[in-house]
Image (tube, rainbow, N blue to C red; front, side):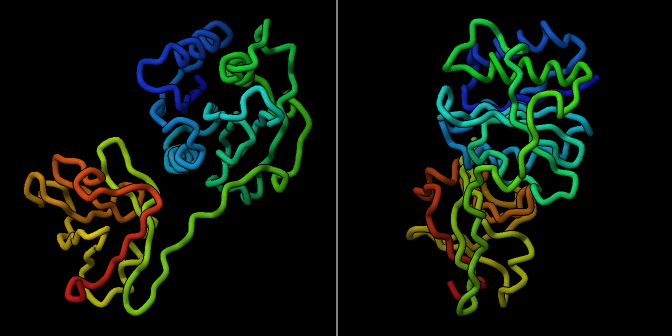
Length: 265
């Protein structure tokens, strides 16, 4: 049984994801369709790239990942089929695969050009349903990547700028907010290993707020209390136990975060 994942910015309860599932079920009833995430912020390619990067390894080999975060739908952008480490990604060529290991020695990319597989009539506004879903269903039914179009160099793909590492200056880490998740947790670009460079336990400064409690589980902070924790993706997270850190601390994506040894804040 082949697994097909769906990642979109459709929002919860949207009928668009249901239509894609209908196409896949009609053409590949044996496939298992998994809703990975439908709450990507509208048109936010960078967030979609982060979600895919943090999730794809948890699926079995030969999983097909469809990503429909596609502000250029109907325009000149291409749809590609990317193979990386035994997984398949059917996506618009807009940078959404930027965080995948594109340098993997077995990574290959093909431009999707199989109009005989597409739905007819073909919508100019919903290529996820009319192109990506039928191609994924065909691939799940025994197709090979080379069946869908010409191979192109990985170097030709559109990529996002790399995530900047934190800067270590004057005994402190200068980081940035990369994302805010559905719980309001603040995800930074600081990894667990970065904290070893500090002279003591970490504390954070964000806007005019100071967070000094580093914990191993959320319950170690009082309800409503702000905390620092290493999350499941090995990133430093600023959270509030049973609350929304982003609201409490007035945080936005792209804001700077300073991490210093607790005695220095």
